[in-house]
Length: 393
Image 1 (spheres, rainbow, N blue to C red):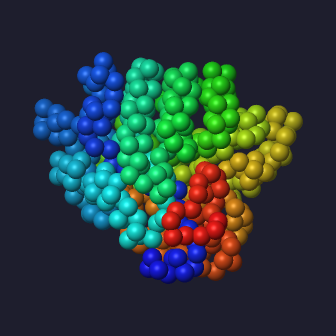
Image 2 (image 1 turned 60 degrees about the vertical axis):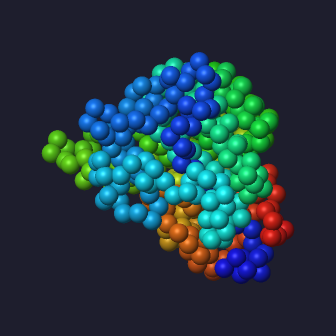
């Protein structure tokens, strides 16, 4: 398979892979005076594993931390409380960079942009802005060390929390110097203390990432409490609602993207770039059509100078997931320059051989379009160079 990839000269970039942070990451990387408040995994009084964030347990993950990973495993055992530990769901490629490189070779992936896993779960539980920044700083130090094994193929994405705007600026500058190529932002309003994206206190942050030429990305989060509670009945089994909840994780990302658009962030910061991750891609063309139409209808009340679709094409990309059946048509309709792809390895809903699957989805496109989706778009968007053995982008 690897030989065939090189023969076709198509660099392949996974725009949203994940690590599984070792349980002692924050105890090792947090500043010594804060280590008693480190994120940690411990057992509660019932003997169940819990993720503790500044001493507060993450309710939704209690006894089910193995489901944070779990690629290739059955959902029943991972989602049944108390059946599996966090490490049970962690394949070596999630926490060992050498093992990750071997997985990438097997999966025909040249470069991966790496996002957190525990990091997508803790922000809604933190109330201390400075501690939130310290948690990000600790993770960012760890992920840079992880990626130092092969900085051409393993690309660190910095985790930044907007609860502490001044701290976010300081940390994103530090992370950029350390080699982080982009920024992960939680779409959850609690993660920014309820601030809206156009809050004046966040303006210096947007200016900073724009000046640093550092794309930001929204990604789904694992909330401690669901925002979908009104849709659940008193007699519902919580586990029975898991498909409903799992599917709607995308709502956070879709809402954050739409808020950025309608609040004029792309107008105010024309060099700001945004990646829309793990919400699928098949919805985006219909949504942009809808935004364009509503913007035209409400033009007297809108400050936007361009149509939402024009801002998107100027400043955004969206990630396709291998299970989506319409990726080729979405690329044709939206344009080949605006789609990247994501494996989501090593999470429960990820799978193996995804590059082959994706190639099948886009096989009917011109070779230049296939090349862009497989890797060139991600290289361009993040300012990366091709990895060894591959091509001209």
